[in-house]
Image (cartoon, rainbow, N blue to C red; front, side, top):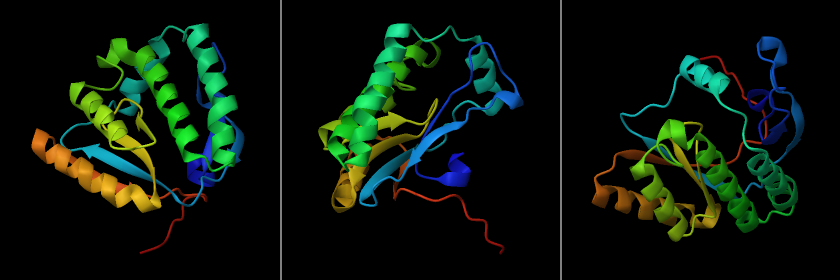
Length: 189
């Protein structure tokens, strides 16, 4: 879906009790991400997340997410995240995104050792928020973190986090990326 459409996509998820290629999530709706928003990607050097098979096996063995946690995520999505995206309210979007990431991280914490993949990622998360990132999250099981900012603040945040990483001796590649509101393009070489 994201490959074909780009933008912000909310999908159905998988239906409970079903799995297999015929039951892949389907898009519920899609919105453009405001052009001025930027994401810092912090890619941990020398680390990797779970591969597709490891992730699938782990996800198939998980207990269902507690209803209270799932309900809070739905509430944040419908009442805060999506409206903030429509209104171009990066601060509200970031707060909702961060809380959703924390709730999902708590759910996965028995498998990854904390809300984020490790202590360094959690320390980096706290630093990014203290330095003015509107929101912070982790890609799937890591090792990539991302921070939400806007175009005019992206370079300052990038330099600040690079200084922090150097002081801590942490090896991450830091990239500034813009939203992609269209599908992937394949160009011949």
